[in-house]
Length: 311
Image (tube, rainbow, N blue to C red; front, side, top):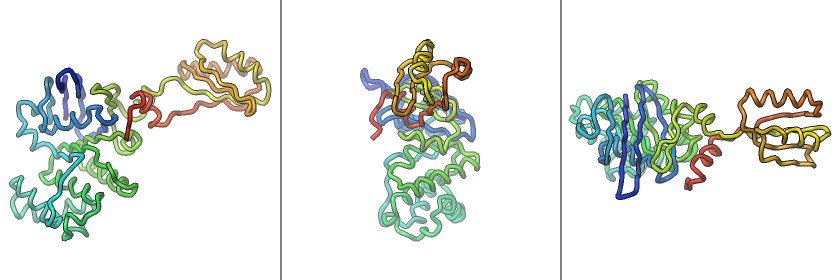
């Protein structure tokens, strides 16, 4: 379990992270989404004990990142957004080196390395030199490295960054397998739809502040804002316009005469939307279609972070 309480990182008057509170249960895949500079990497660096918070604390399986950093490091596997690999080492030598760094016996490493390579789909690259691997293969090798000591918690900072579509799918499948193994996985990204495919829960961070947390459906509902309604009619466009404009929950009306269509924002609930349609039908409006256009996750994210640069 991960318990974050009041976590804050300040540089002078600038808050890179501001009073973060978050609790994650065991075996959860959690996605942390935000624009570049929003506070994702700062949070992950603190959880990985690479950066000290200004205030607050985080407990990973009951161990404090502030008071017990050495104990925390045994509980976590950390994969940074920018990672290094050693040239002139083969894949199995690379993992063997890190296994030895965690004081794993040679017999343990000999058994473990093939299992890890199978998990990350690199079995056929075992005797290849690391520097000759593609970026996607290096990403998966570094994930295997983070797993070498069998941690309960994985912290993956932008694990799909720079990957082609096929490599992204492979990374997603590996993360699903890690969940099946009971691992708690934290993933950061600035691409909300990417996380939606992998995660049980998502947190949205903006300017160092957590502004939403829940499953994908909850996040979309919470950040959706007003409904955008499309109404098509066979005739009586102006009559319909006048009818809908009388409703106090309707705003931002747009009329498309050529398409015989009205478009407007509706701030009411689903029940009130249903009642609006019922009243329109009772008013004998010639409605042929009444639909709500759903914003996709990217639109929702752009709106809630005020169009922050995602590049």
